[in-house]
View 1 (cartoon, rainbow, N blue to C red):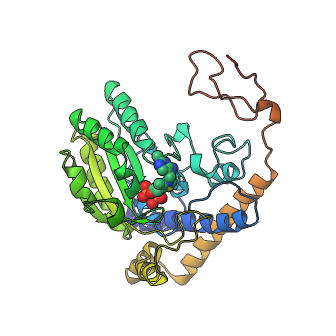
View 2 (tube, helix red, strand yellow):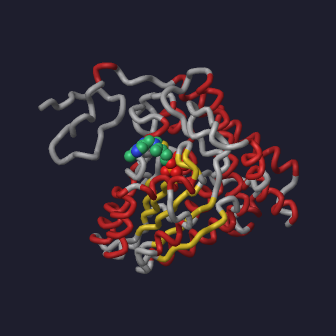
Length: 349
Ligand SMILES: Cc1ncc(C[n+]2csc(CCOP(=O)(O)OP(=O)(O)O)c2C)c(N)n1
């Protein structure tokens, strides 16, 4: 995330509140523009919005260092932005452009930036969990004090992969921070219809993993819990699990008619909006004025406008490159794709 804002409010000086606010607003405004672009058929494929859940990405990722790894789901725009993947590279990916963070091959659900240790973007529910446990095992074997944060939804906790991964991480005391975004629905299925035990932290703790539930609509609570858990993981405390109780305001994806819940429920949750909540606290503490907020909004709008302009102008990959990356280009180079857009011969076997 760009470190801008009024100097006195930057970083920990203002309790990091300005940065948290900026992070959440960037995610929300970015996605609001994505809705417009999707409706205009500029963005294709699927689009899963994170609006309402911003506090989890902004708060959790501030608790990590640049060395730590992050693994996410298909609802990952917020995590990628909070990780510092440039809005420009994400927007280009949404447009399927060669300059996108995944070379235009992933789209909305497969954002990836290995240089920032952002390992997806996984469309398969629970698919990121084994990846995270593998990354943590690799760090452990190399003797590095790193944390791998793995974000997934409540729906993923009904998958076998969740149980296998939490069990293995607990057995081997691997440095994984499991972050469940409990937004109360797995597509159209309400929590109580998918889980016999709806206390998700309790379920994780049955594997001997330190687990607790957090108000996922309160970014300060999220950050505090994530810091505490990440530090415990980093210093050998074994895996930790955080159940972030949050809510998505939008439908599961742009294709979902959202018929499984009432409007009143959504309106109730909006009263606990994470951005409004932080702004109110900052106002009360004299940390923000209307003019500050206005200039922050303008700065973010300009950043997103620039990202869109750049995506519009960016090239698509040449059709001759269609089969690139299906197989590794050279033996021993798996996982190290060449520069997207550069001509190269696909290896066929
Ligand atoms: C293995 C697998 N099964 C089913 C699906 C279809 N599917 C896509 S999203 C989803 C619900 C996931 O809900 P949750 O994990 O709570 O995440 P959320 O969308 O709420 O963020 C399902 C079942 C899938 N993508 N992968």
